[in-house]
Length: 226
Image (cartoon, rainbow, N blue to C red):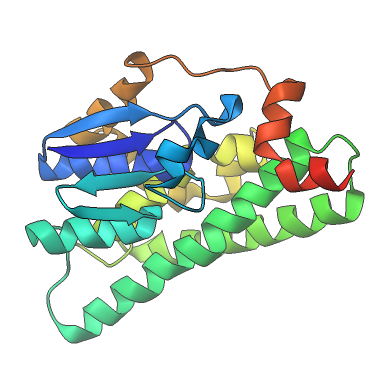
C-alpha cells in the first residue's frame, strides 16, 4: 500500500485527487507543517527538502507533487494523453503549473496574508504574476473542456489543487475574471474522486493557528535571518 505524506495544502491535495482517481489503495500519513513535523528526521529521510507531499510505494520514494503525479500516471498508465504532440503539451502545461501557477500563487498568499512586515513591492509583484499565470490558464480553457482538450489528465489534477484556493490567493472576486478556471474547477469538484480527496479534511486534525510557533516552522529562513 502507498504511504501518502500530506497536509491539506494545494500540492498534497492534487496528489490525493490523483490517488482517488486511480483507485490506488493508500495510507494517508499527516504531516503538520505548522507544528514543524516536516523537519522530523523520520520525514526528512523521505523528503530531504522537508515539504509535503511525498509517497512511499514499496521500495520507491517520490517527493514533489508533480513528480508524484507523473510517477502514478506511469505506474497505472492512466490519465496520460496518447501521442507525442499532445504528450509534449502535457509536459509543458504540467510544468506551467509546477513552475508558475504554484510558486507565484504561494508567494502571493505569503505576502498578502502572512508576511508580518508587509512588503508592498513583493505583494504587488507576486499578485501581478499570480494573476497573469491564472489569466493564461483561463484563456487556455476558453475553448477546451480540460487543459489538453477533451481528455482529463494529470494536468487537470495539478490545476485543481491550486484552483480551489483562488479566492484566498487573489481575493473573493477573483473568479469573476477567471470564468473558465471556475467552470473547470466546478467540473472537477463534481467528480467522486475530488469529493473523496476533500473528505481527507475529516481524517486528521491539523493546527489552524498561524501563531509564532507556526511562523517559526513555516518561515524558517526569515526567522533565522532576523
